[in-house]
Image (cartoon, rainbow over all chains, first blue to last red; front, side, top):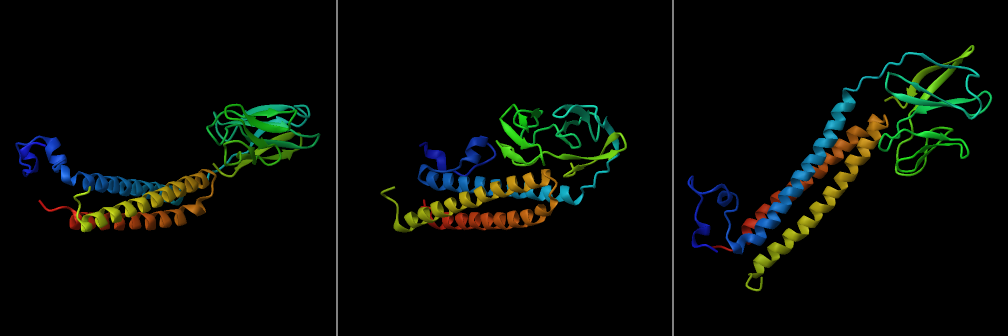
Length: 172
Length: 80
């Protein structure tokens, strides 16, 4: 250890000596203190993250949805699929005709890492090919895999011969 | 280490214990943030306020422990 290690830092000393102005005997204390400081800063970061979520939730505006025609009734066969974009262009959704009179539609974006899910007809479920996340065709809930949130559901309404998308649940 | 005074050894032990507690609290905060974010992205904003409050309390506890560590460190540090 150089003799001048414990000298007070001055303007002429390099930055590293100012940052590590410690003797070897103090080293253990400093490393512990720095770890504690690092952990406390990490804690502050976590708190900032939670505060950011809180602010975002305060200023969150309820999204307005416009009704959009998705398909004609009977346009797709039972077990068939139609892709469409709702509520905006580029937001891909998938509609499945599960029986003669039953249609369901969900966002096609997997809630894990946003891969596109597809309908596995033989297993009657929506599957994400990226990480084998499976979703119920009934309500979009997670059946298996890394996703923790269900697929956002597109609420459909039948008006005469047309299937209309009304809104998304839960709201995006 | 064998030349440490008893007061310094106690100080180091206390600092180690508090650091372990800090790690536990930080782990809880990481879990809390991921759970709150998951709920928020799922459209459940009602978890945001309790999440922020609990996270703030945990941060306050971490900060208090850090201040305590600094004090113990100052008291236990060998004098030149």
